[in-house]
Amino acid sequence: MERRDFLINAGSAGAALSAAGSAFAAKPAPAKSGRVIGANDKINVGVVGVGGRGRYVANVFAKLGEQTGKCQITQVCDVYQKRVTEAAARFKCKGTLDWREVVNNPEIDAVIVATPDHWHAKVALAAMDNGKDVYVEKPMCHTVEEVKQLMDTVKETKRVLQVGSQTTSGNQWHQAKKYIADGAIGKMLLSQGSYHRNSIEGEWNWPIDKEAGPDGKGDNYIDWKMWLGNATKRPYDADRFFRFRKYWDYSGGIATDLFFHVVAPMNICWTKPQYPTRVMAGGGIYEFKDREVPDTFNLLADYEEGHSLVLSSSMANSQHIPGLIRGHEGTIIMVEHGRFEGFSPFITLKPEVAGRGDVRKPIGGDKYKFGVEDVKIPVKDLNTMDTHVGNFLDCMVSRNKPTLDVETAAHAQVLITMAVQSYRQGKVLYFDEQKFKIVDKNPKA
Image 1 (cartoon, one colour):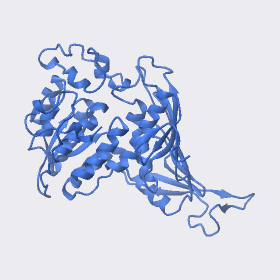
Image 2 (image 1 turned 30 degrees about the horizontal axis):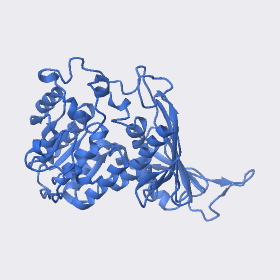
Image 3 (image 1 turned 90 degrees about the vertical axis):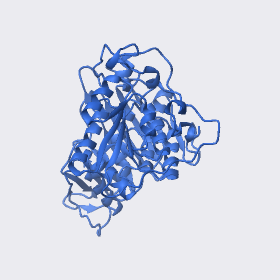
Image 4 (image 1 turned 90 degrees about the horizontal axis):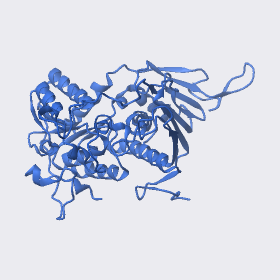
């Protein structure tokens, strides 16, 4: 699949692509360069997807715009007319049911992509090909092929792409990275984390607007064909539309919705982002029977440089495990309470010691500079969402890489996509980084 299968012609949006997105037979046109943003320019932002998350993110952009003058929301889009009407009124801007009008709009500098997962790459690729910078919600995309397309497109178009996992703008991951790079834990062995929730009605069972649908009139109209895109064609299903994270066609469930908030920070903590070599996943639908994706999900991944990652999650139990990284000479605990999106005032370095009685000797030797006692390292208390969005806006001017750039996010995305496939296929999977493919056998065996 070529990335320009999703290229949008800057002319008529209706003639550009079908609702599902079709390939061009002719040689693709070159990507457009965007407007050069000066430090005093106001950035015009378009939003594709103004459901609950999209409205929240758009509100953060609008708030920062009002406070700093850096940006403004100038166009919104959704396949549900009610959402378009409400968002257009909220942001005093134009609204549309057709996302192609947003990515083709020459007045727009940046596009927020907050659609269901299976549309993320299509909209982001088209936006970058039309000279827009992109803030795309996590997960970055839906398939490993799309990961490669996004990386190639960022490199070719030189656009700024920030993945919307605001957790990565927390200070604790960057502090942990410094200490690990400085040898505080020695050889890295094992990282662990979790993401647990519990709700009576079952996770992702958001309210359904019963009057809405493809036959709805006025604000009740939903463009179901557009929403499905390249997913399996089927009659309108309100549960699939309003609760899409429960279904494989549009989501990876726990892995893509929640584990992204764990794996992306881990890749920041490690001395460098890494692709897994081997991934296996398990779990099941143990409590909530109204879904395709598991309500309890666990994964184990191994990495070429000699360490492993273990993640656990359940949507039917809320007890976390500490988020930490173990090394031969010490352990760094980033979140003692285990909530990767929660604030912790410090990270803890626990040196590994050996000895008997009153004798305590660091594993790292007598000259081990961090000693034998626990060290608490202060962490800045940041509004991570404001910081993450602000970083994106600043990078639009400086053209620097944002906090969660496409390459760092790619390492997280490959892992969670492999975990979903491992669970669904019931087998261990490997990643061939050279071919950028998921395979059944270790390519280096």
